[in-house]
Image (cartoon, rainbow, N blue to C red; front, top):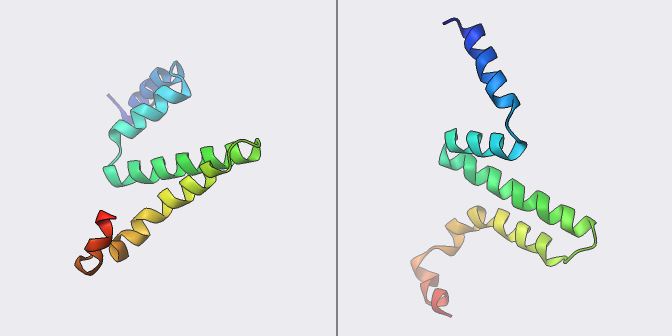
Length: 87
């Protein structure tokens, strides 16, 4: 089967899927690092929308904190500060 025919068949099968089904399908195929980035972005986008709609502002703070976790993990996870983990 040629690549063009295969592409057409895959596109046809995806046409009947909802956006949520397409997203889940793509997430299932993606490497874990990419899934984490997508999750962080989705949480950020949801928080921004909730904030724009006048809903709880804590959602934006939560999203910002989640986005910052990987950056701070190297600083926070060390033996010198391990005593503070138990507070």
